[in-house]
Amino acid sequence: MSEEVTRLTHKYLRHDKKFPHIWCPGCGNGIVLGALIRAIDRSGLKKDDVVLVSGIGCSGRMTVYADFNTLHTTHGRALTFATGIKLSKPSLKVIVIMGDGDATAIGGNHFIHAARRNMDLTAIIINNHIYGMTGGQHSPTTPPGCTTTTTPYGQIESAFNISELAAVAGASFVGRGTVYHAQLLDRLIEKAILKKGFSVVEVLSNCHVQFGRRNMMGSPAKMLTWLKDSAIPVEKAKELSPEDLKGRTTIGVLTDIEKPSYLENYQKMRAGINVSRQK
Image (cartoon, rainbow, N blue to C red; front, side, top):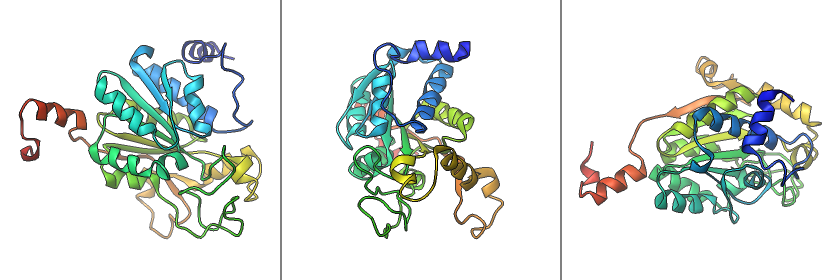
């Protein structure tokens, strides 16, 4: 282990109390956790100024392992708890970790309205296309045709595009990465943390136990190769036709706009300024 990895481990992880972790060998959640603590370290934030909030599922354990102010909440409600924290203590940097089911199924309405309000939160959504911890049920992002415990004959529903949903709902920043492209993921999370308003990073990850095994996708390494081969940088995607982009997923910064956050509008309202007339 390098000196830098040792430094980050001892500074940001509850390594002496909460490990070994419960994630399956080869799970992408560890890569996301590593990217998160590197991004926070580069941002210059103090640990006491960061709140990490999670819901239920494999990703929810991240708040157990990370040594910040942490809150492990109920299924689908991570954004509601995070909103309350931010409104009561605006000086805190609130980061929310969710899975694709947690964020866009039971938590879908909270996700849409957090984006609509442009709440000052950073949402990291780990999308492994399935409910990994609770039995392998299909999620809103399970691709059509795929097999899960609740779709034994194949998924027949269309899949949510998390990043597009966030953008059209009003998020200030939307990025998408994969656990294979770890350096890009570091940069996306750092940008999201430093961005004003509601920022979203969708992380495409592998669940080789519940999703990969049922869909004949092989080992963790093979699933990472699948993520690598199916991803295309957003800059290159602009040069290709819709036909050439079929079956590919764009990665990088998808949305980055400047507009007032919810807290800014709230403070203006309290000061007696009519926000609806602001241009």
